[in-house]
Amino acid sequence: MLLKPSRPVGIVGYGAYIPRYRLHASEVSELWTDGTSGLPIQEKAVSGLDEDTVTMSIEAARNALQRAGIAPTDLRAIWVGSESHPYAVKPTSTVVAEALDATPMVQAADWEFACKAGSEAIIAAVGLVGSDMANYAMGIGADTAQGRPGDALEYTAGAGGAAIIIGPAQESVAKFEGSLSYVTDTPDFWRRPSAEYPSHGMRFTGEPAYFNHVVSAGEMLLQALDRKASDYRHVVLHQPNVKFPSRAAKQLGFKPEQWETGLLVGRIGNTYSGASILGLTAVFDIAEAGDLVLVISFGSGAGSDAMSFEITENIRDRRLLAPTTADYIARRTPINYATYLRYRGKLKMK
Image (cartoon, rainbow, N blue to C red; front, side, top):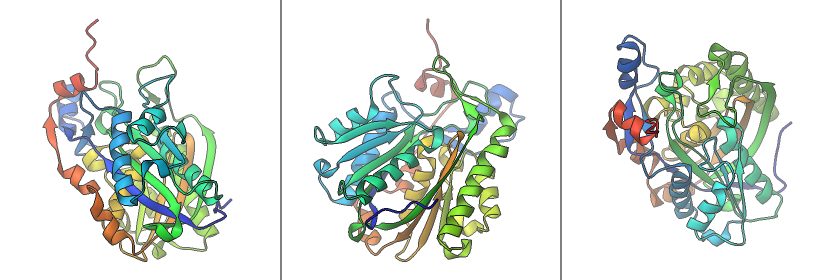
């Protein structure tokens, strides 16, 4: 079923944050396979010793506020989607809200749905603003690099985050056209409360998990909006690796020039809850008025959110007000595998 708000809304501000540290995939391959394994990506972003989901969310949120041109106290909700919240019992969102000076009159909550926790928060923000209960609400998706040492995830699990502020359509850089969600109980990826690292179903994560949900959500939204792939200038899909989103985009009828801008996984890894949203911010950095943009997230467990946006004239001036996603990607400091282990706390001293 197509979801549309009661009043026109859109994205009035957006912001990204990507840590500067980069671990080349060859570092993982050299240690665990003597360099014989193929490299699914080039490198991934790694959070530093003083970075986590909270700090990355704050940086992305500040950039979004800069572009929106509103006061933090104008936000009626701050929702943070992640699968690497620093606390099991204590919300990330309240720390973020306090750091932004948005407290105390604000809704705050943490969201979970594996890699689509961020898109869930954004759709909820659309509902809050679209129902006229608020003028501005923020949804954030952010995660730190996770993955058992030597596991396939260690090549691709990166760190980063993105924040989206939903507000009135006339103020937006991208008008919200509609969304559609497709969800089933498909156990392709999971982590028990007592487990330190996630587990995954290997090839099961592709079919019937990723491709069934992403393609189904995309096809159904296009049909509901009476659109076809060629109508869109850009498409951004959840990107656990390079192959999955490229294949799914082809199945939906898109061409490489439509998905290449938002495909960041090869340079920063899979940022989980921030992956599709970070790709969207990269598109906003180069998009022009009138462009249509399709975004499809994916969360293991499993489900996809498909959203359609139309870029407005406001984009040209607004994107200059904060660092671009490309700026963060270009700002890089290479590290070796030993440094990565230390930064991620994988060396146990007791």
